[in-house]
Image (cartoon, rainbow, N blue to C red; front, side, top):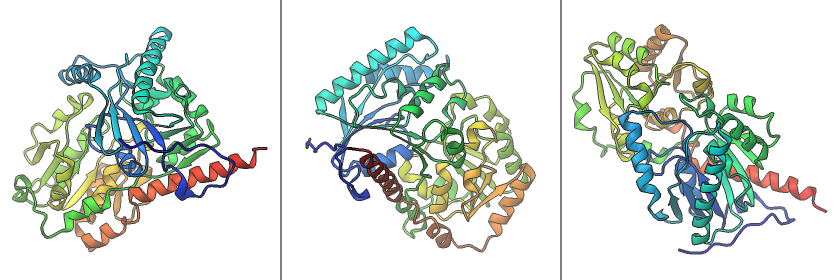
Length: 407
C-alpha cells in the first residue's frame, strides 16, 4: 500500500488537471460486488491517482421478509466481520452495518455513532487524513462533516426518496446533505431543477459509458452466446435490474406484437417486482436469462436487433438517466425508450410517447439504415474519463472562487 500526499485548499489557482490527484477519497455507495454503476466507473478512474475507501451500501429502505432480503441481511452481517480489503489497486472496501430506520431520533443517533466508529477505524488503519468525502448514498449524510473532510461532494444520481420502501427520515437526511456539501453533482436536468435551491454549487454531469467495453460487441471475434444465437428474430433485448420501475405490461405488449420474434430479459428480478413480473409468465417468446457477468454483456448485445429501456413514467424515472441506454448505444444498438427526459438528447434512442407509439418506434428502429458503427461512434466522446474531467473542471472553478475570498 503506497501512501499518497494529502491535498489542501491552498491560496493558489489550480487547473483542472491537478484536481482529485494524490488524495484520499471516501466513497459511500452501493455494494462493490454489485453490477458496475456510475460510481464504480468513476472510482476506478480516480483510483489511478488516488486512494479510495469504498463504503458498501448503507440501507435506504426497510427490508421485507422476502427470501432475497433475508439473504442480503445475512450477507451484511457476515461482511461486517470481515476486515477492510483491497479489491483493486488503491480501492479498499469496508462493510458497514446500520439499522435502516431513520425516522427515529434514537435509531439515527445509534447509526451515526456506530457508523462513525466503523469508518474512522478503517481510516486510521489506512492512514487516511483530510479525505475528500464523495457521497453517492444519501443515508451517508448521517456522517457528513464528521470525518475530518477536506471537501464534501454529494453526487446525486437518483430521486432516492421516490424508491419503493424508502425509509422515513431519509428525506431530511438528504436535504441536510444537499445544504452541507461543498459541491452537489446531479446526473439529470430534472434533478438539477429540483435540487439547485438547496445549494448554489449544484452542477450537472450526465452519465458516461464504458465505451471501449461495449464497443467489443462490434468485433468479429465476439461470439453471440448460444442461448440467444438461434432465437427467432427480431431479438429485442434488455439488460439491467428488473425492478418495479420497469413497465412489464409494455414488455408483454411488445412480445405479443412480435410473436414470431423474441424478447430477451437479462438481469435479476428485484423483490419489489416479483409480483409485477408474473404478467409475463404465459408469454412464450419472453426469455428470462437472469443476471449475466458484466464482461459478457457486449456479446449479448451483439445478438440483439434492438434494445429497450421500458420504464414506467413516475417521479423516480423522470429524474433518471438510465446508464443502460448509453451502453446499448456504445454496443451499436438502435434503442427505444419510454419518454424519460434524459434520453431525448441521444440521437439513436427513439422515444415512445405511449405503449402504441413505443411499438411503432421499435418498428422504426428495426428499419433504420444507421450502421452499428455509426451508432457506437456517436457516443464515443461520452466516456467515463470525460466525465471525471468534467468533475475536475468544476472543482477547479470552485477552488478559484474560494481563493478569491481568502485574505
